[in-house]
Image 1 (cartoon, helix red, strand yellow):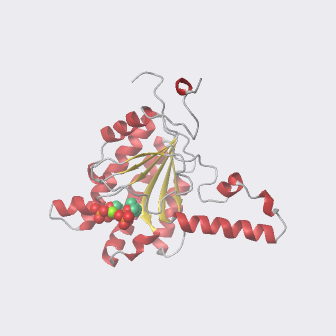
Image 2 (cartoon, rainbow, N blue to C red):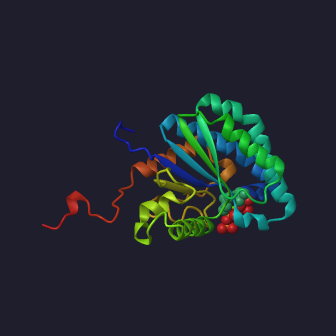
Length: 243
Ligand code: IPE
Ligand code: IPE
Ligand code: MG
């Protein structure tokens, strides 16, 4: 592509299809999650090479606590394993990892791995990798509303001060630009409670590929598709203005 190809600053991904990938191979669901972790490495590589600044990965939704305990335990174990095996490397590569979501219901071990990955990679300047982990967009917005109400009652802000910027600044994504591109794999066409406020003007892309098969090449294809989109933000294109 030419040098003019526009690169998204922030790519958010709903990593879906691990269970179906496993089922197709006669494996257990947790094996699909293990295979899915490899695809994370491919995306981090592709994003760093392309010059993407932020990648947000939907890793575990608040609703996912309703899955069978064995599957939840396997996902938590996998998270701990990935932190233990990848934290140093990610730090060397310049990747800063942030965990976004409610810090509730996690075991002590998972909580300590969250601290470990965030502190080990804190200095990373190349790419910020945000893992949405025990994340729910609706709950995030409710917490923002509660926080703003609390501040208004305390007299720190006036009700009229509450605008889009202040609301954005009260979300878990405060300081992070809205995602330019949201990818959901596995041929499902929904957002499943992911970044609902932030997705207002995101470009959406729904490849059929199941998450464990998502490669660096698939990521680059997504960037090509993004580059070919015209983002209008409610305006009109210059060559289509009424005379
Ligand atoms: C996505 O894959 C990973 C998580 C939700 C943790 P799924 O586990 O949802 O896979 P499918 O949708 O059942 O194939
Ligand atoms: C969304 O996938 C959550 C993650 C990818 C972590 P789900 O598989 O849980 O979503 P639904 O149930 O198909 O909407
Ligand atoms: Mg799914």
